[in-house]
Length: 587
Image (tube, rainbow, N blue to C red):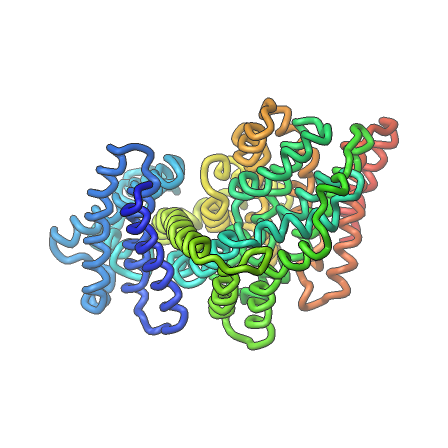
């Protein structure tokens, strides 16, 4: 990238970061102004910076300019549009609405590929022509001025509550992650993990588990996790003689756990706040024990694999000194401490606390592990924060804006209620068959749609059915969110596995088989949450929650050993049955 281009994208990223931070501190910008401006700032990153060719950049620049124009028109006319109550007046407004929807679809296509915008386009087609579908899956018809007006000039559809979450909360935590990752925090994660687990049996693999859990708590992306921590852990494992399939599986499974690890959870936690009405702190508390169980199951699985293979720990000369661990850990402990103090000590909102943590993290960007200051290095880190933060905000915006079209159509046409009824009738009114149908839907949708979008779509149609069958809203949402992650390690489309397999030079299917065995917790913990409701009630009933964690953890350990360890077949079968009993009985 040329110097002028770098300066431009740095300035645009700084503008995006400054805008989102301003929204938190001001709180005075109307939604129909802030949300279109959020999209306007995201468009150049997705359509131009992330374009793969010169021609794509040129066409992207044209589309971005058109999209920015429409967004600015909505923001400038927000007050007048609010008085229209979702009805478009005249062909000019209809044309602008259609252009806006087309730009959102193209934005999502360029950011994440065809599947999600294709689903959104089909939803729009259903909204327009669904009245001609015979039977119960048709609808009574919608006036076009009302349909497209509700989707584009009201706080529904494109500018709905999900987009509000992206604007006011997710973007702030994305900036927080970008600030930490630009400095020494990433190395701090690795050093803490190496010091804590490096000397143990299977130590190199356990370092991967711990570092991915720590890094994933702020990145919220399995792919980013594999690419970053895997660049260090995968060579270490292969150098120590770990089978390549196992090394890739360890990194893929550990990295996938980042999306269920508070506080970020791949933006899922903040969307869950909006959809369930549960405070953010409550979501974190509910998600914490299941996430720990996932990583405990991976840890036990590594020990079980060590009975098959000689899995060495890290040599002493590759483990960091206590002094280095202490210094580098401060680069993430200080911002995290500020974040937790803000939420639990000062009692401010999560996004306000994250802003305070961003300030602390930004100050630490000026220092390295020797606690020395370098002006050029600091400027380079600031540039990285601006470009990376702007790009990541834009990518999430593209996903959320497109998913919001689908949610808007489900609500306007009543299709969501009809699919819910189909799930209820297909399951015979029984909970566990409904859970199975939901899990299959999550797996299929998650194959090509990002986790957060898959969760939003699935929970919109399956969530009400599961709640009608007796689950609490939080149980239903956490169940769906976990199963939206299945495709990260489950064939045929398993993104984390593909990346890890490429990095270790192993057949992806071999890596996937090992990953599915090692990642049993991803399949079983959601079921444990249903059979043991106390597991997610850490704040309301801490003793019961911890007892449930011990019970489910023992079940997971037994099943993991039964599946992986080279034991007598009868003993393996007995361990699996014992684990299933602990997991599902007496909850």
